[in-house]
Amino acid sequence: MPPVLPMTTADLRHTSATHTAGSISETDRMLIYGWKDPAMARHYSRQAAQQNAIEAHRKASPLENLQK
Image (cartoon, rainbow, N blue to C red; front, side):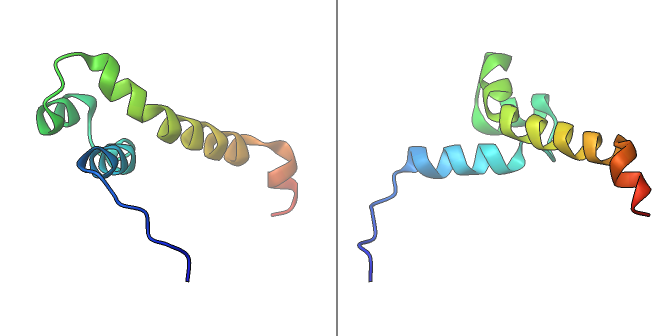
């Protein structure tokens, strides 16, 4: 069994912020996590934005629609 690495509160906060980025507004996340600068909310939104862009491209792709 591989060793379990200790998790810090910063790790938990990062994971939570990353997972909520696609489902909670920037303003709400700023309130929840106590951020004063919207740049912090955007930092954690990057991954969700990339996934949204990939999904939007897939839906709009003519090649994807040929298979339907």
